[in-house]
Image 1 (cartoon, rainbow, N blue to C red):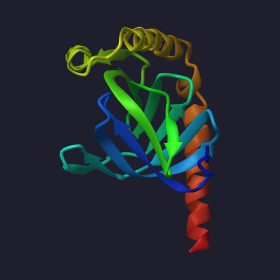
Image 2 (image 1 turned 180 degrees about the vertical axis):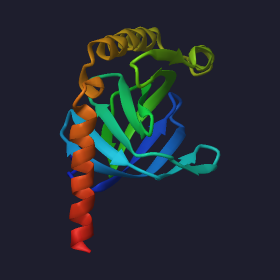
Image 3 (image 1 turned 90 degrees about the horizontal axis):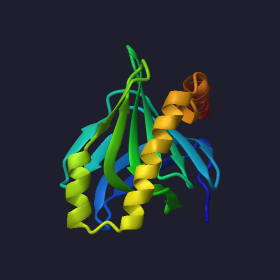
Image 4 (image 1 turned 135 degrees about the vertical axis):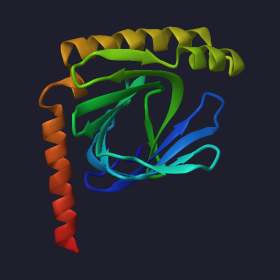
Length: 182
């Protein structure tokens, strides 16, 4: 399997369980790429929805993907602090210069004070029935909701106090390197 290379620009492709594309982020800069972890960053990137609608992200974001966990985490850097949007999803694969995963509807939104809210439980139940999620997937996802909440409470992974500083500095460094190459 090819690995994303630090400094390169890749896409992010989100699919649904039925194999249909859900959402595509056009440009994300790779800050770290291994077989298990990809950390990327983007700012004002074009996002295309499954129905063709497009929009631009509003703020710089650090994106965390893991090949062994059933979630990914988007850290949005806003003026009043860091907000985290955690997607319950399949582990990622890297294919054709894109991170690809299946979005399983459930999300956890984490606020700067580390309080959090579980979102989209109704959407999850609806899609679980419509797309016939297997029971094993349901159990895996519910375990991973618990794992994510544990990470939030323990300030582990992307929720660690120094995570954002380390990766935003790396992002700025990469941007500087690219502007020097011009």
